[in-house]
Image (cartoon, rainbow, N blue to C red; front, side):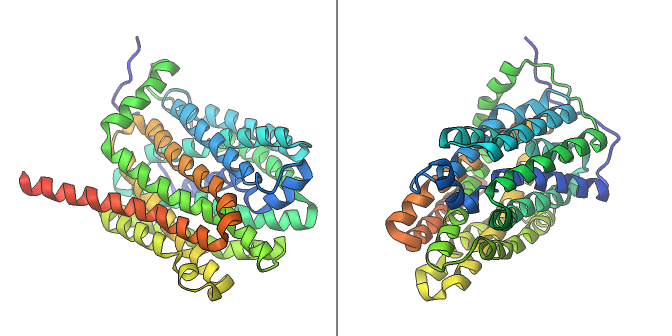
Amino acid sequence: MSSLPGQAEHTDIKMTRGMVLLFAFCCGAIVANIYYAQPIIELIAPDIGLSAHAASLIVSLTQIGYAFGLFFLVPLGDLLENRRLMVTTVLVAVVSLIGAAFAGHANSFLIVSLLIGFSSVSVQMLIPLAAHLSQEESRGRVVGGIMGGLLLGILLARPVSSFVADHFGWRAVFGGAAALMAMIAIVLATTMPKRQPQHTASYGELLASLGSLFKKMPVLRQRAFYQACMFASFSLFWTAVPLELARRYGLSQSQIALFALVGATGAIAAPFSGRLADAGHTKVATRFALLFGALSFAPALIHPAFGIVGLAVTGVVLDFCVQMNLVMGQRTIYALDAASRSRLNGLYMTSIFVGGAIGSALASILYDKGGWFWIAIAGAVFPLLALVRFMLETAQEKIGVQAG
């Protein structure tokens, strides 16, 4: 039986500023695939024969597909040559997006939604590759810079989708995304450095090692739980807010796009967070992110008269906190075991997107039952759960240090 070596691969390739920008652009473009449908589900659902109550399934299945890809595909980054793996995965995304553009029935669209999520995980192969190519003292800054591009892609996907759908129809969103992915495949094939991991284990052994990694690394479990809660709140908000803006305030898709652009300002958290992590302020920043993530929903809970302004404040603050906590978590888990970064990242991100799928699935149900007030309560509860666990674990660590 082949073994999983513990040493990291050495490379002479370094992460220059140009490489960081290239990685950031590719990450943002690829991750946007799983968010294009989020603000336009009310346009897609009636066209494919899906009920309004089940519309959020589109978002949930895309995120579930992404979680499957994180678990089954991303670990291959510790086994197969990285560039070829990423290019192949992006080409599958091209086919999936074309399928979405031409889908005529609910079942077929839901299936390709699952595939879009599944095939968009190459972004989570790029980030561990960047970590391998960067120096220890600058790894947080590099990862933070790339995460800034990734998170900007998440936040810009919604306004771009709304604007394109409003002027050219929702199918043009997926057709355009397919064309962009074809271009990204060419960029990856011609500019990305090759990296052949030293692992010689079989795929089955690689997957089997995931359970032992998750079990023996409490820090990984902790960071995964914190960010799963944060991402559940994030997905809940951004799945429900287009419904609130359209139904209560009568905004058009283009106006919803402008609203989503406001949320994109939260992307500044990623590079800032990377520098904080490099400076050793992870615990303070995590406490801040979890606390203010919960407090971001205060405008709706204090008084509904805050209206669209209150929603915008929630969006900006929540996005900032989610991104800060995400970068802190990635910087932490990448330091656990250099030779297992792809698998650690896969486990971490799988947990996150399971949380995101839960938040998206709850959005339509909670909004239909209790309106935005119920959304705000649930949105605040998720970060509070993470904050309670963080405070308990921090207290236990202090007791352990004092006892030692």
